[in-house]
Amino acid sequence: MTLQVLHSAMVGAPTISGQSGTLTTMLKACLVDGFGLVTLDSLVVAGGIATATRAAGHSQSVGDFVTIAGATPGGLNGDKAVLSATINTFTFDATGVSDQTATGTITAKVTPLGWTREYNASNVEVFRSPNVAGCRHYLRVDDGGAEPRDARVVSYETMSDVSTGTNPSPSAAQLSGGLFWTKSNTANSTTRAWVLAGDDRTFYLSVNHSGGAGYSTYAFGDIESFKSGGDAYASLIQGATATILSQTSGTQYYDVDYMDAETTTHLGTYLSRAYTGLGSSILAKRGMPFALASIATGARSGATGFWQYPNGPDGGLYLARPMVFETALAAIRGRMRGIHVCPQAIGNATFSHLEEVTGVTGLSGRKLKAVNSNTGVFFYDRTGPW
Image (cartoon, rainbow, N blue to C red):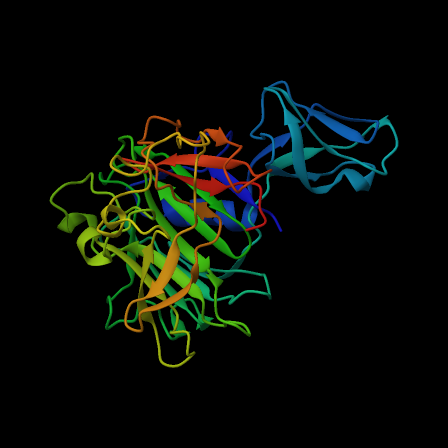
């Protein structure tokens, strides 16, 4: 499993803007191809540790995965977890390789999440998880519509070509054309910052579409289902239910950690089917696993008005993964994978954007990445497994 937290400030990262095709290009790079390909100046093995050097810089940081190719001996090639990094060097485990300086034209790139590209057309891409332990449903992303600031996304259980599939989620009756993943509030080439976090079953896309402080966040993939005996339909898709053209303000946020009703935030969450396995796409809802009225009625993770931070008795930071509820059946279907929300009043200034956070209560040994969600903060687990 490759768990990555990728972002637009990385060397060689693809860009997105309010123009057609920029999102599909970025997703293909992050999910399928990788990006930031560079040629290394040297790769030296000493004591079972390989040190890569590139005077012009690189994209890697501790915990990231990097794909090495072209090296002799061949044991240095492949996807490697970065152990340490400076501006010009990074290291990875080379156990079993004798001390030496590797030869060849050696390249390094940011490792993709490992998804497959199933179908494509002009500004349209269809992606699928390769992990047979998951649902492996298809994600169709149309980034070539009439409104270039929004892409349209739909999940399918099966597909036979780029435009044909079974059991769409959301269905045409629920939201014709699919959910909206907004890239920018301006239809021009102004680039917008982004963060993509995920593994080979689930990913989240956070986009700073207004150019301000906060990020809107969208999701696709498996949840951790509570259904016993397996759950072939625990596939979630999340996005805006309205085009940016229908907003009164171009700065409206669609936050994965906003625990309000989706109808008031314009954030839609859908599951492929109910836990019974019958029927078609159903409306779902996310919620914090904390019994606080102020949270249940719509506050954001880490915003003001929650419990104190740091926690008085132990000075702790407390986090939990959002629950996923089936709206119609009033059932707790499961939890979202790899993302943590906070009931404490940390606001959006306690942790800087993409700050690495450790020592979280109940998450010993795990490193998290903070993401600014306008008035609050949520966290991606960058250690895993999810």
